[in-house]
Amino acid sequence: MFHKEGTPSIIIAIIVSAILVGVAFSVPMPIWLHFLLVGLAIFVIIIILQFFRNPKRNTILDDATIVSPVDGKVVVIEKVTENEYFKDERIMISVFMSPINVHVTRYPIGGKVAFSKYHPGKYLVAWHPKASEENERTTVVVEHKNTVQIMYRQIAGALAKRIVNYAVENEEVVQGSDSGFIKFGSRVDVYLPLDANIKVELNQKVRGGESILANF
Image (tube, rainbow, N blue to C red; front, side, top):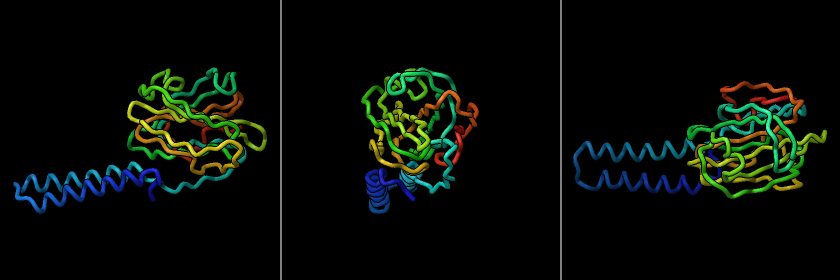
């Protein structure tokens, strides 16, 4: 299963690969170049398909848990001051996605979208300390039925030049469902209440929609 955001790229990859194979079989050339072109065509298709894959995840709906919105590795767990929406201290968990990770973003909790905003910005490397405030990003806040609000922020990196965000204010959303997509490597920051019970550790690998970041 592939994400709908990948449709144009997949079509282009198929066309490019078909051209390479066509040239390989129609133009006289050394045998090594023939195999090189065919191999390149296969490589292009594999890379694009694996990047835009959208595997089904078994999210266990739970009113007391916050699941990871993306696949990747936990690179930051720290207390920070969140200045855009809450304007107070929060626990921030950052998950870094490499180009080989699934890049679908999923809602960490269910509830109503209280805030959703896109910010144009820079393309610093995703792990840069200022990336969460200066890079291209989207900020989404979901309010749980128990009134707890959880924020997550999609952040573009040096390679990620397009962030897709489906969250619409006042819309009811389901935990673990598709909330967007980030093309190429980047990161997502999740902002939790200070009393949240953190369930992950630094450098731990997590799966979007399944791995529990915290209880509340």
